[in-house]
Structures are given as structure tokens and as C-alpha cells.
Length: 257
Image 1 (spheres, rainbow, N blue to C red):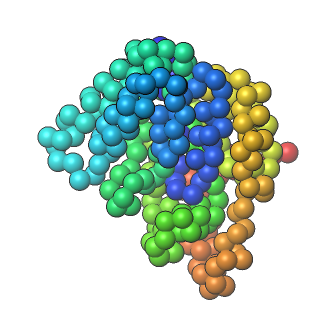
Image 2 (tube, one colour):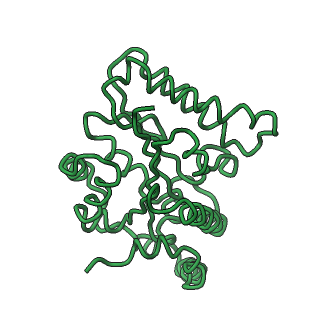
């Protein structure tokens, strides 16, 4: 496969959709899905992207039995190869896919596995967007509903899973981006990201200015919109002990000099 796959990951509510829009902006980029498509104007493009999206989702279906799981990853890889070799995507140099953790409905059914992404193609790169887990949990709660404790538990579980995989895979294939830095100091966040993805920095900065994620990263919104006792519980749940489980992410989110 001669095209680079950029996979965008992060827990729900972490800014992954905003990041997908920014990274999809250069002319030679195509977004194959998540919840945002940017496809070439070719009659086959949408069909191919839809088939890949369905195959990709099938490989991360936790209700699969072994027989189903033996066929799902090869089907996703075959769809990606068809896209890479198609006339529809001939001009694309970068293919982007975003899946948050978790995704789809029901909420506990589909969870991305970063090792599967690396198995799709030798040239895959993974970008993880990290946001203060309290803000991410509240953002997911606002968008998808549910109970605050259940959403916070899911956020913590998925951050732990992502952090373990990212640490094991290593910095050569994984780049962690702070959503707060992206909002507060976009060029400082985008310069190393552009280098990692081999994309033009100017195009990414222009796309960021057009998209303009909420500056600052809206991380304190939960404090004004949740009840006081809910805020206290959220702060206590995501205390220093739990956040110490995600050193790779917390280091990326440290304030820049």
C-alpha cells in the first residue's frame, strides 16, 4: 500500500472529531469516516468508504464469536487495499480514519484496538488526542447522555487501555496530542503533528483557524454546569493516583514553556 493511513484515537469527548477535520483538510487527504467524511469527487468513493467503515466496525465488535473474528480483520484489510488501488483515491496520499473509545451503539459494544490498526497496513500512523478526563467525561455525558459515574468509569477504562497500547507500540508509530494545547497554542501542537504525519503545516494551521476548537479547551465547563457535589466527585475520581496510570498522556498535556 503506497498511501499512509492516519488513525485518530481518543476517548469520547476528547476532540477527535475536530482533529479529524483539521488533518483531513490538505488536498491530498481523504477522511474515510468516524463521523466525518471528506472524499474525492468520484462515483465510487462513497461506496468504497462505506464498505471499509462497515468492515472496520465489524472487526471491533465485541459480540463476535471466534469464527466471525477470524474473517473480520482480513475483510477490513481487503477493503483498505481496494481503496488504495482504486481510481477514486488515486490522488490521495493520506487516508484518515477516526474511532473514539468506545464508539457506536450500544456504547460498550465497539472498541478500537490499536494493534489491529497496525495490522491493516505497514504504513499506519496513530494519533491520540488527549483531554483532561473530567472534561472528556462531561463532554461525552452531554453528547450521549447516561450517568456521570458510568461515563467516568468508561473514560478511565478506555484511557488505561489506550495508554497501555500506545506505550507498547512506541513513539515511532504513535503521536499523542493535547487537546488543550491544540486550542490554546495551535501551532505548537500542529508543528510536531504535521512532521509525524508528513503533512503540510500551513494547511493544518489554516484548517485549525477555520475549525477553531473552543479556546481555551473548555475544560472547566463541567464546573459550571454540573451540581457542586457532582464536580467534587469527578475531581476525586480523576485524582492524582488515577491520572498516574496515564503518564504518556499527562506528559503531553503538561503546560508548554
